[in-house]
Every structure is written in C-alpha cells, then in structure tokens.
Image 1 (spheres, rainbow, N blue to C red):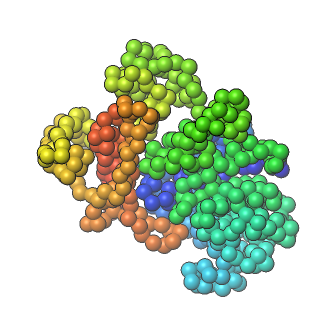
Image 2 (image 1 turned 120 degrees about the vertical axis):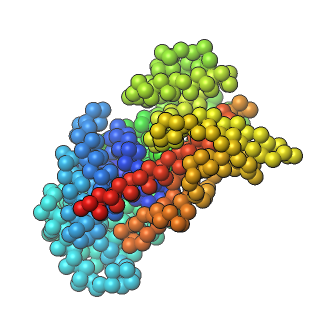
Image 3 (image 1 turned 180 degrees about the vertical axis):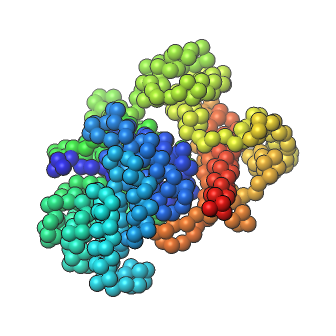
Length: 544
C-alpha cells in the first residue's frame, strides 16, 4: 500500500443504517453503493449478512452488481466489498458467502476487548478473549485473503491488553487492524496517542493497515479520526453525512475535505472524487429520510452561505476572505441557464449533466422532466435546488406499490379539515376516498389510510422550503412505525436485541400538502415492501 494514501472505508450501509429510522431496502442499498463507487470509496461495508436474509441478499447483490465497477474511479481498481461478522464461525461464513462474488472482498470481524464489555456483555475473561480472536481470525483468513479485525470499545480498553490481542490477530492473519472508539469516549490527544502506541508496540505492525473508527457522542469523531491519521492510521471508517448509532459516525465529507483543504498539514492523498460529495449526501439523505442540518459542515444548506454584511463585502472583494474551499469542489455549481416553463428537454438534460446527473435512464429523465414542467408552470424560475428536489423525489424513491394521483383539501380556522384522495393501487386500479382530520395533512393521511387499510404510528414529521421566496417548493420528511400488533421488527446481532423498525419517507412539491402526502406514501410503500419481503422469507423457510 502507498503510505501517502488514506483509504476510505465507508460503513453507511452498515453502521449508518443502524441510525433509528434509516432502514433501507435492497434496491436503495444498491443505488447508494453505486454512488459510493463513483465517489471513490475504497472499501464499502455493505452490511451485516447474518442479521437477516434481507441483509444477506443486499450484501450479495452489491458484491455482484457493484463490486466490479471501475469506470471513473481514481484508484483504477473496483471497490472492495466488506461484510461485518461477530467473532464466531457462523457469522464469518455467512459474511464470506455474501461477499465472495466480488473481485475484491473482505471479512470484517470484531470482538470487544474492554473489561466492561468482557465482564458484562460477553461474560468471558481476557484469556478467553485472546483464544476467540485467534480461532475466528484464523478461520476468516482461511476463507479470505483480506481480513479486518476490530477490538470493539478499544477506546476504553487497557492499551497493554490491546497490544497483546492485536499481536495475536496479526499472527492469525488479519491484514487490517481497526481501532474503534465505539462510544465516542476519547479526545483527539488520547486517540492519537493510542494509535501511535499500538503501532509502536505491536509486533508486526508494519505488515498491516491501521484504521480508525470513531463515534460522535462528544462531537469529536472527525477530530479523533484526523488525530489517528496523523499518528499513522491509513484507513478511516466513515459514513455519509455522519449518520450512525446514537450521535453518529465520522463524516466522510469532513475527513475528505480536511485532507483536501489542508495538504500542508496532512500531506496525504485519497481516491475520493470530492465533486461527488454533495450528490452522494443528498442521495443518502433522501433514501434514509435523515435530513442534513443546515449548519452541517461541507454539505449543509448554509455551508457556503454568507449573510453577515462584513462577510458579504469580503466575498465580493475576494472569495478567499471567507471561503476556505470552493462550492464547486464538493459538487455545488451555479446555474448558467435560467430554466422556466419555456425551457425544453435538451436544456433540462444539459443542466442535469452539469449537476452530475449524467447516468439517468430515459424513464427517469422523462419523469423528472414532467415534474419540472409542472413546477415551472407554478414558479417563474426553477433553480438548481428545485431540480435537486425533483431528482430526489422522482429517482431516489422506493418502488411504488401505491401511487398518488390527486389530492384536494378544504381547511380553515372555522371549517372542518377535509381531504379527498385518489390513489393507484398495486393492480393498477384507481381508488378514491375522503376523510376528516385535525388539519389538512392529517386529513390527507387519514384518507390514504382508509384506502390502503393499514395502520401505523407517525413518529416524526418535518417540512422545509427548498429555496427562498413565497413561491418556494417544499420538501417533507416523515417517519412511521407499524402498530405493535403487526409484528414487524428488526434484530441487531451486534447488541443481541430486537428493535422496532422505522420507515422514512420523502416528498417534494410546490404544495406542502401534496409534498406531505407523497412523503407519507413513500414511507408506506417501504413498509409494505418490507412486509411482503418478510412474508416471502417465512414462506420459503416453511417450504424448506
């Protein structure tokens, strides 16, 4: 490996999906994996194959359909596809079976090493821990030449015991050693010292790649990761938008742009194509339903906005006065074309290509152009942000089991909110119904529920303007959970606990009620698809 290159290990599809409400279906995972390949990610941790048949199938298909993609990648090599496994042979075999079809594949196995985890979670002592590491890493290496080992909760483990454990992992065949700050406990000084200490004290350290994996519980994930890089780590484990368990993981975009913007400090390279960052961020946000906060570094709506008068004056004189990086570097561009209702398909397609959407299918282009025309009839100018919202709403959506045709509402401070809804169902038939509600959005949701005949609990609802102005389009994001009687849940083998599944939805329109209805149907379609998948798995199990 080139010692001047930092490898990016993206775990959006595994650790990121463990964010509450970030459940993704197989097709969505494949689309995100393809975009991660375009972005230049070196290793994609595609999932936890033992967690469920759905997880296994998603990892297997990503390995098959994405694992061989090379076009446009700076590294000149396809992305390595990794599967996570607990330190037992069943998990490891399952992970290998899922990833083995990829030209470059990896088994990533882990076992806790902190005394608190050994005593209370695993109920084993240090000697048993070492024995399990030797046995399972050796087994993984017998299947796969690329094996990563992680001592879970390394940030709170005894450094001397870590040296002992990692020495045995190297002897057993590990090729990458990842040092997780699993609960986001360390500070940059502590984490950097730990990486440096382990590299200096572990026999065989120069034969493996050292990796960081930091959580953001104290808001230090990126700082800790960069401290680890400066101490000698040459792989960083990250997620898009920093999503992940609890407060999240290290943000890919933050680490990538820190290396890019501060070469005099780090003097290191990466294979990341930074111009793909914004597009990837918006895709992940749309599919997971996790809205990016406006002041989020690199990808937030305010990241390149300047409102203060002093700042604006400085920007007009020289952009470098208040911008340490250019918007274009992360894929934000200013439109050279003013698009409106008289703009044609060619101008629209050219604008999409300028924005990086040059691989849309003809069907996706046609659907987006139709929505663009509808918006252009209602807005004087359709901005880049509007186009982004259209693409997200038309392209980054789950397969439609139910589709919204029309909606009409009546409401006011002295009237009963009423909604009439027309939907197209799974067999192509049109259904109509109406309902009352506490407000127009609630009435629309009640009408949709009457047609589809399903019940759920709305756990989160948010709506935001896409652009400024009274004619701004709206983006709605919601989360729903099936009623407890439906029996739909997930299981996290990392914690050995079931969890209630949450389904997110996203919708955009020039009308906030329509946007809300589209978001609700998006979430419902995900929930219904998951129910069908679960029924199929049960049926196949019964037949076996």
